[in-house]
Length: 389
Ligand SMILES: *Cc1c(COP(=O)(O)O)cnc(C)c1O
Image 1: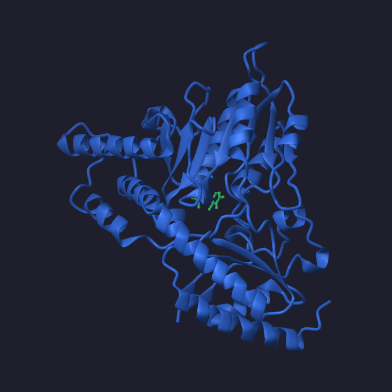
Image 2: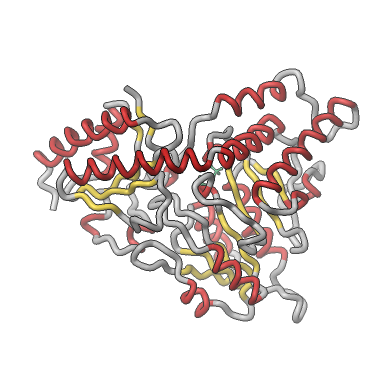
């Protein structure tokens, strides 16, 4: 049996999405920027995809920029906004101070690190013991020269849902720009760009059963951003490069399906993860759920198995056909403790004993039953000869 429980790393492409993409990989291959009829038709398809996405995310579609994924979108927003608005004219609204939460994805944290090296004033917003960013902390940290606040909508490691609505409202009131990495929100949390007062937002299609290598950035185009891709001037000059039309069509369809079937998916995944966690608690000793039980994406179970290495569990489950993660995919090659597990106060002894299970709409109860069986065996065996701690 093969069981995929790593849906926060990537997801399987939905067949219906693939069907929508096919014509744009084969007969409708024209460049959307070409003047002839093939280009013209595809340029219309591109516009329709933007209009559809704009309706779903509640935003003006002319502020949507297609990218290669959320890593690019996050880099584009943070670097674009900070570099293009530093050393401002007096009272122009610029500044050199940026606040990012301490639990962001590496594509934000590493970008922030680069900005710091360039001389920007970068500060990290701490989280409380359940892994939630605290607005009162933000209120203490903002200054007149604060230009941008970036807080993710849903955390990718422990699934905590962040109060982006209140952070966005606060930022707007203060005249500070607000960005949110909403990659893990789809379809569990409804995205509302206007309602969240977001100036910038990042998404990636492969995290919601769309294709890899395509994403988007919502950009408040009243903010000055010098493009870092120079070229043919696509996407209002903000992101040059030939449009990945099959990917874009796939992303629009995947997003449509995700929200059209939101209730069903949320119900199914919530029931499966509740059942999974109940069985683990009842049948395996010395386990603990990391993060907040209630304020959590239903697809995420980040669990501590005391006295064993998460890495060892992962490898053993892998030989049994089960795919899980010890943290985020990007950090799983480094034996480095997770920022967020540290931030929520895990003790040193416990930092490497965790497994992230992330479910998706294609998982079944049979798969969960198989996984519980395998996990019991794995944990018992590892504990029998690991006198750790
Ligand atoms: C996966 C992920 C990203 C990166 O997306 P890519 O499209 O793979 O570059 C960014 N942020 C979060 C929260 C993610 O989970």
